[in-house]
Length: 570
Ligand code: NOJ
Ligand code: MG
Image (cartoon, rainbow, N blue to C red; front, side, top):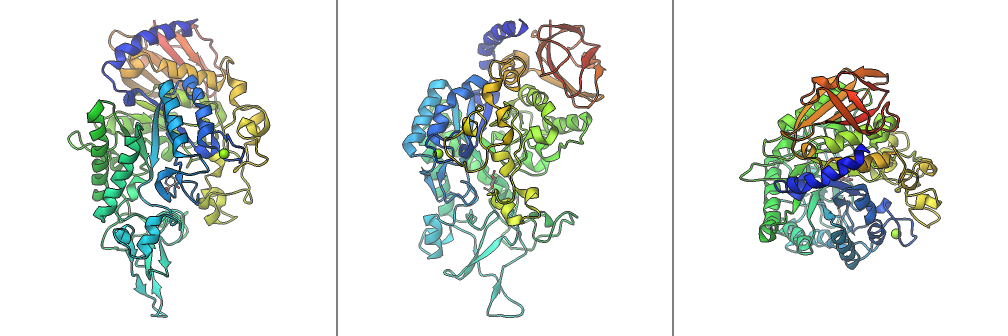
């Protein structure tokens, strides 16, 4: 009954802890990929009313905030990351009113709602782009237009101004016949880059923020932050000499002129100032999460300074970028410490293992590590981010070439699509074992449901002792313990075991052990701060050697392969 006891303690502690930490610092952010969460109208694509109907699941899981991947008007060339109208919801997902209803339901449940702000580009079907092509002010300079250079063989033709490569492969420049110029697209052809050297555009995008803030949202996840500005000299980028990169791959070049420019850092502080105006009005923090895949020191710059803050939380992609299935426990610990010791002393930490752009954690590291990974994400200091499905251990689906829809995969062609496609991690949420895993009544869904859904679904895990989901629920509850909210971190690799403790003066110590290796072992956890003597098992993973409530000697704890354990001091 240790867990019951914990619940009572946690409830007591929560109010005390809330006194000095703001909502965004203790949150569990749950990313919903709207196309794949729940389809309410039977067209095979998830929608807002579907999400609203399932918000109780978030509450039940113990998450406290959600960010929705883009739901705005879009031709869906990049599944919503190509926005044609930043002020309106796409009819595929519902109406603006449906969104307000979703928000109202979230409010009732005490869940914060964040939207995805996609500032780097719009859709080529945006009215802004049409007017920019026609040089109608103020839209003329809303995009990055260039004349290019005369073609060496045929001077009547023009070549792109430089060698820049799009993230989706091939030249980042495309010719527009009507305007007689090239436009820049750092992502797909249908995603022309917006021009942050245009003051009118800068103001427009701030108005987009204000528009949704005025409608009560709690913050934004900001997309593709590093790409906002490009070097104005348009110089060629140098080769990366990455042996795996073809000349048309984004990895072929070092992005010294197209990513992470000082102007980009500054724009983030300007957006933060917009958010802070709202925060100042009613004391409710509007939060900014920033998507940055960059070298660590560059990522840290996006926190800004205390005087001029940037994002509250640049995502911690350390595990996503560098932790592989051949990494050791020590590698994992090193990655965690690089992040934890590197962030500004005043900053709040965060932990992420998955999203809609990366293969699912359960598939990258193995399904046996699902609980262990959730223990790390949810019990390390700061906030946790969960990609929908991680709470039940969802895995990548196999998507054949003919089933593929992701432009990143399609652009790579049938032989290389699997290296790039993000379809496998985007398949519908597995609610139960009925048709389409309870996601939709449609005969076909936009991406197929993973064939493992009959066994792997929320319903089969609900109320079941030691299922991934029950473990997840216990972990979100355990987050309320004072040592988890505010305690110091001591993290070490003890052989194959990722081991850490969270200690706080006068409070129970929380110890987390994850056997990252393939062998059974006995670990001495007493080397961790605050972990001496007897410990009580609070949350064992699926097939752990101990049951909840077992008392063990810290110096000799048995673990099976990939086991995870959460323990507390007496
Ligand atoms: C990052 C998003 O997460 C990804 O899905 C998208 O393709 C690019 N940015 C472009 O918006
Ligand atoms: Mg639908």
